[in-house]
Image (cartoon, rainbow, N blue to C red; front, side, top):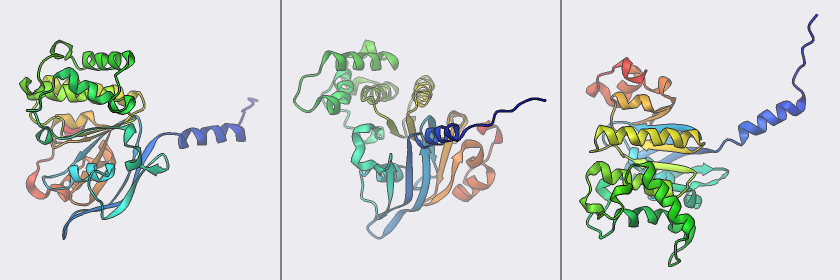
Length: 265
């Protein structure tokens, strides 16, 4: 007769504590109003670390609004966003946020190196000299995105894909716990898209939270672990396989999208 050892109470306690210790963001009944127009209403979901999560939905669905509302960059009319039992907006030092390229002043007289070093300001403090450690971290970030050769180039002279790589490097230099990107793939080449997704995967494997507003429903969807599907309210949230279904897409887009099952494989 074989003797089977059952897990002890201590074992189960350790397992439960391990689950509870996973960093997560909890969004509860979030709503945003622009004057009298409800841009987003009653959105709730949970983001776990170690995942690359995409926010998808039609134009005007509230994708960027959701991201900004979570971070406290715009006023919310209802709800909360909690990270590690505290409001996320009170912990922005732990967040690296990259806005849409259209919201950035590309005529500002800054070099690639200047932009990446901006990612070290929160760690260093305003009007203080950057340490050698900060410089090394920024150099490593530039190398990681393949932009070291452009460090002295004015940011406005770069292509769209190169600019996006530089802002990704700035985000990496922040050494954040949460990475938020608003449509990082708009107007960039496929090579840069592949580089960015590879780094997103590395960040997730390091236990970071990676949240990405994405407008493309093509093959790039396969790079996301989880999805949040919106149309001014939450249609579905969870694993890619659970969310990216014909029924959910029809609810979000109506007859405006053709469903390809193979894209989510």
